[in-house]
Amino acid sequence: MRLHRQAADALAAEEAERGKRVVLAVDEGHLLDAEQLEELRLLTGSNMDSRSFTCLLVGQPTLRRRIKLGSFAALDQRIGLRYAMPGMDAAETGAYVAHHLKLAGRADTLFSDDALALIHQVSRGLPRAVNNLAVQSLVSAFADNKSIVDESSARAAVTEVTAE
Image (cartoon, rainbow, N blue to C red; front, side):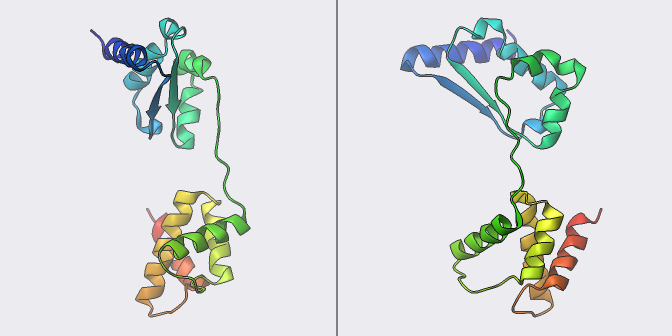
């Protein structure tokens, strides 16, 4: 029995037993290979349409581009709702960093405005990229014995994070 058939049976049994809508969440979907995407397509096949089954396929922007390829047309046609998270604007990026600093116990200013502007520009406001650049900026400032992350610390972080 193929994996998709076993999974479909397990999902149907769960729904029947609990009487609730079943949600399957697949995170890091951009890491799925072609065979796994095909299994997912089979799992969401026509025999599942009558069941209360929802699949959330979450991943990086490369996932959207891959699914648009002709070889995944059948899976692409089964997607009922698409959402691409836009990047934060500059003010949101600053508030995002300030919020995380507050969670870490810092209420004072730790990043200069020009450092935050550079972090926002390079990250395009994407939270994971903001996190990576902010952490690396903190490391750079610490290495230079600075009490505040300035633009030069952020530039060093950009160089470090974007280096191949």
